[in-house]
Length: 408
Ligand code: AMP
Ligand code: MG
Image (cartoon, rainbow, N blue to C red; front, side, top):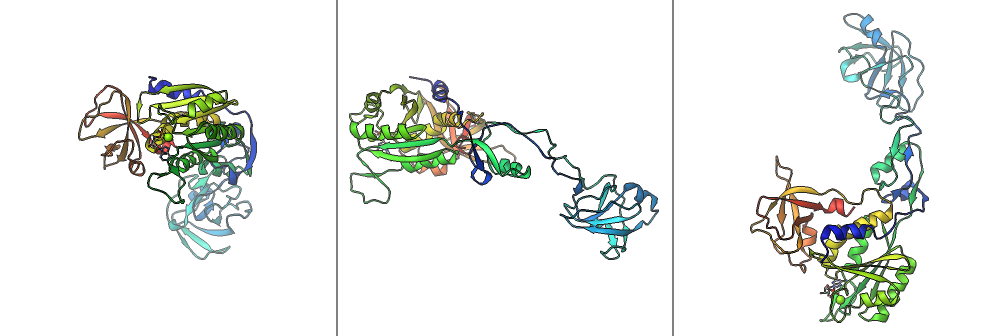
């Protein structure tokens, strides 16, 4: 039996990081991984501008204006307009995002003024003493040109993409999406939407794994199904290892008569490492290389496949995507369990994180932990790890693998 942590490390080494890169429009970049370090080319904001609706002035003119300062409006500047230089002793009417006129250094917000009319020449009374430089967003204070912007290996989401757009970029250099082929196996399975006889069940792993892969920024390009015979498995595996970068097969890999994925891989020239990983749910997990492509074999049970994909397979996918962070964060949270938890294998319980006022969160355990209970999956927010052979009692802290991090 292989320990869970060793299996996770070995799987993560199952393929090399990508070398190819391609340019894509920002609109198509979500989920893809930055292939180069990027440096800011532009100061952000590109010029000093106002953080408020109000009036710009030279701070020294306020001090010189006496006890009830009233100053005339020199000009009105809307966001997007180019101001004239500030005339000493006058105000510039401006708005959030308006460029500061050269010479002005301070903004008084309009709530602190009484206006004699918003037009050039109108007199405005200043009701509160400003601090020098207040309400001005300085050129480059957010991002300065020349400073590191984003590093290679970052998976791009809306926040990164917005930052790139703010630099004026319309495209970005990324690694191409990893093409993932999924192979479901089993004579008992029918596709959702098709009629079903009594002895059949619907195939849930195909669409489940495709959804998980796509959610991570991979691309599930193929979802094939093979019957439990070697020829059918070989055919499908040949296609997938030809046309994809990574293959995930599911089911047919334990020790039953119909578990023919292993011989099918071997007949295609794959040398297969089959591990009984000391984990629950899970256990049979295998990896082979066929045609230079990694093939990972997951247990057929949907709950097991979901858990094994999440904690064992995602580091490998992240590595193939070119990401720098392969192992997302694990937090330590209090387990709430009516009975002690104890198993000879490392157990991953389906749990739900609940945050009560004043606490960082506690983990509630789904009451039915049998690996056949698929209804636990939408309920759960993550997996709690119970160490092999160590009983865990109510109130103890355990490692928590949050799906939001581990399936991203
Ligand atoms: P196996 O590893 O092929 O023996 O599968 C283990 C269990 O998971 C069996 O009860 C299968 O019917 C079930 N199973 C396998 N593949 C799927 C699938 N794609 N969708 C739903 N259940 C599956
Ligand atoms: Mg099967």
